[in-house]
Amino acid sequence: MEFPCDFPLKVMGFTEGSFRSAALEIVSRHVPDFDPSRVQDRQSRQGKYTSLTISFTATSRAQLDALYEDLSACDDISVAL
Image 1 (cartoon, helix red, strand yellow):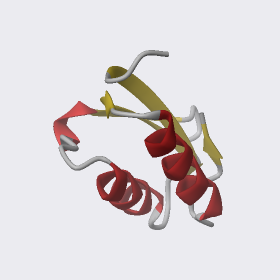
Image 2 (cartoon, one colour; image 1 turned 60 degrees about the vertical axis):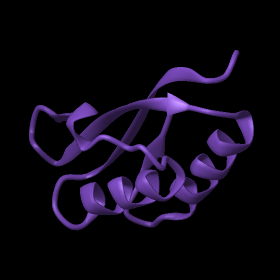
Image 3 (cartoon, helix red, strand yellow; image 1 turned 180 degrees about the vertical axis):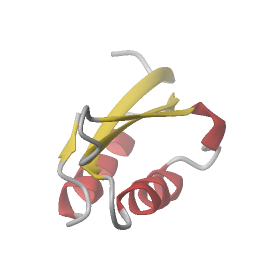
């Protein structure tokens, strides 16, 4: 992987609660030029879960590692890919 590069991050969590705001807050901490208009969301068939695809410019492997570490530590986030 060569940096900088366009990176699509996918995170999933329960639709109800603070999943979306928690995920976006964590991403904005790690991505200084984060653009919320580059977020796509999709609900599961029954609406229980939501997945977010968050596209941004990744600047380094260290940035991605720190981002995934924070996302994995958040109780509101079920999966980060």
